[in-house]
Length: 622
Image (cartoon, rainbow, N blue to C red; front, side):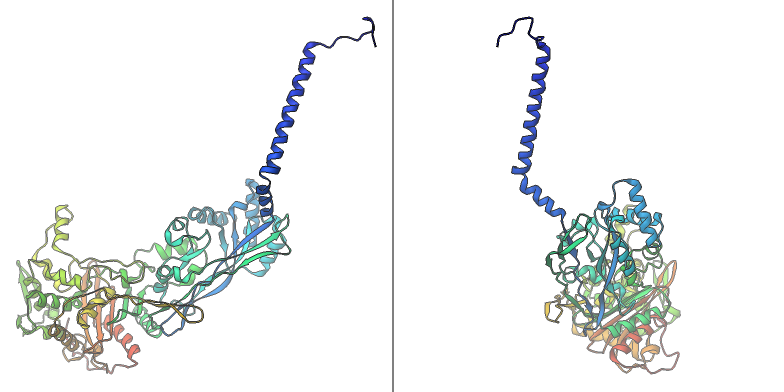
């Protein structure tokens, strides 16, 4: 239809048309981008996001595996498990809003009768160890609290109650240092190869045999997958999959629990810090081992307060967590003399029947050394010197082995001054002083003199800078007694399954062998037998009436600024010993007064025999 010019409307402005075209193009581009994005989400990534959506409906709960039990050599249970309900907070699931998170933690503190400040402090300390791990606030929570939290899950996001296994100790504090403890794996530990496959919150052995045999005891965790609704609650019939946990193996120890009980009682009965070892002198099986002060291992089955941590870890004097049997550092006094005897005989510094004059004093470099109590024993040979514990006799041997390192060489061969290789963490090598060691200190200005003959003389009687422990002394005596086989001490015997079938035997080979002449052995053991059970012997007053023949040696060592260290090491039965017992007490005085009676109590339990009293005053002064 044709319109006249006066009938037409106003022409569209060119600028307006350009704007409309631009908006149209932009809309087209936006729709294209939206279409491409939707296509990407639906087609390209559809399966991935579908899986994530399904994962939001599925929860996987890790099921802890029960640790294996720890048994004594006869199968009696020493450490077992019990189930506990643990209240945990998962920091990743707490509200992101600071005020809401604080309010939730305050409510949680009120439910557990704990202040908000303490809750936050506990979480902060635990998260420093494992930032992503759930924090256990309380174990052994009551069922009423569990029901309340389940009914009010929307008010406590991130709060969970898990059924966990915790260690139980039916024998109380018995052998606490041997067992060690179990705790949550730390972030640093998760990086170690031995903890590969574990997750934050898993429990692992932290000390003792729990640590040493953690791989055998730990087992394998299981898992349960369930379907939940939008509030995280399980839906009816929502269990999807169950992977049952595999329990850990049971660890049977070489420990005789009756002997362990007797030893612990003998140790604690003195009220002094100390330690003891009872070991099979032929194969290194540890029959009993204890350290005093001890601790209650159940403390580690719940989160520790700062006060408990301070008491257990930081007391430098009592040091209750230190196993003094393998980490003590003490001079031995005269109990070192059998070791000096072997060194002197092997180096040619003496013979078994060579007479040496003991007139009560030995002078060296203008310094006079005397026997204890000022005694003088006349001309004596080695067997008699051991019976009466003649210091002058052994001062002479120490002087004869200077210069040179025969004394140190043989002491080290017998196990002094180095780790024995026992299957327990925390063993310390101690210190066997040598000329090179002291001369290095002297060159560095850390001591006032180089090594001298006086140092050798002191070491010959177990004095000076010597630092050792009961386990090393037990190994040395056992090596002498069995003719030169250096036993490898061990507390593990075998790993078993729940039915008692043996999965793995633990029988380490001997640590080495040294040449000990049969005549040397017989002379040394005879001297130790006389010292224990012949009139005039240093421990005759304790062992003189014991019906089982033994060979034992006292030791009284100076340990400034402390009072004297008390020692006793004994082998039984003589002349072919099957057991060696080494006992020491800090500030215990004479070995015959403190350590020897404790050793007697242990041997009385082992053999089922009691000692008869002997007349007082018949023992020599050590």
